[in-house]
Length: 211
Image (cartoon, rainbow, N blue to C red; front, side):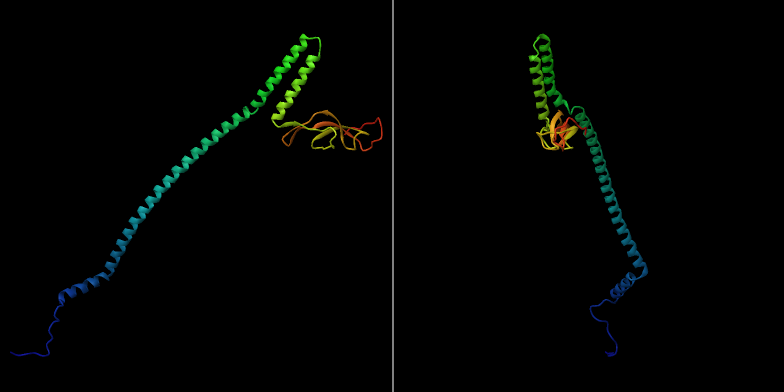
């Protein structure tokens, strides 16, 4: 039996055919066709994700549009309701004042009837005084009060001077007579007091000057 010392034997445990197949697959994986195929697969997967995202965003947009439409409808209903309430308020804003004035009118009618039946005018005078007190009470409950002008320094914001007269009783530029009462509502003048004001010259004189 002869031996050949220079002849190499295949390594034990390694299959040459399996190794060649693995090498071929690695080469195929790096080939342009394989790379292009991987790109196409990645693009398809990304396309699927993009379509899903777009559909989700469209659904959210539709929901947002519905919410906006509902809010607009609610706002329109609120505006219409507020307009109706405001109109009703303006139409009947003075109903409370009118209700309080009706008893005053009743007393005026009673005073007239009493004066017609009696030759004495004292009953009519008492009735008219009662009416005046009631009217002032009604105005006061609605925060409309008389401007206290007599003896006060002249204030063009509260008073309307019609005459200026000398006076020894009052200092200059003072209201010495009220010819028509003024009223104010809270801090706003409804009607200024019509007044006569003392002149700077307090010497007695028959002359009067108009403001």
